[in-house]
Amino acid sequence: MNLKQSIEEMIKQPDYEPMSVSDFQDALGLNSADSFRDLIKILVELEQSGLIERTRTDRYQRKQSNKTNSKLIKGTLNQNKNLKFDDPNKEEELCIFTLKEFLKLHKYYQNSKDEDSKNKFKSLFDESKELVEKKDTPS
Image 1 (tube, one colour):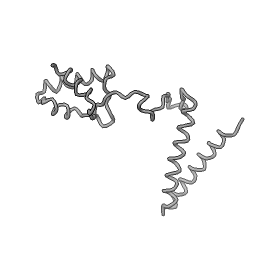
Image 2 (cartoon, one colour):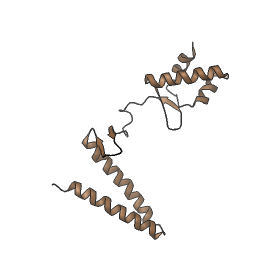
Image 3 (tube, rainbow, N blue to C red):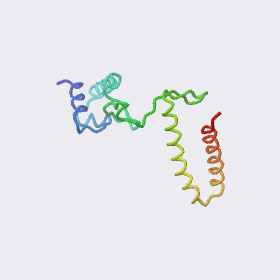
Image 4 (cartoon, rainbow, N blue to C red):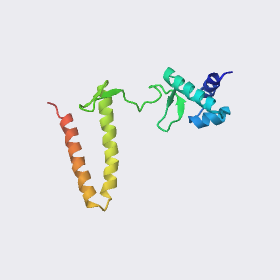
């Protein structure tokens, strides 16, 4: 079995946990510079083919489908314009989620002893509340 097949077999195991490059090296017993280079090439190839994806912590995991990762919201972001959602219901979900998180922070700041932080948060909170109320008001 070649290196690529060995990696694919590891990834397809039900108990597979995301692994770093060095984890793959250790698991496969690779210790030469050539084998390291080959490992990197294969991981990049598997990533491009869609079998695996690299996490923020540089670990490789099986590719997650959008159905299994419901926290992903499909849309596009243009830094010079507003966020545009493919599904208007997702926009509402995100607004509600953000507001709930905001309220958690509000409780934290209410208990804060720093008056400047409290005032900044209160101002931000009031602005956000006004925006939500405007959105709910029919035109």
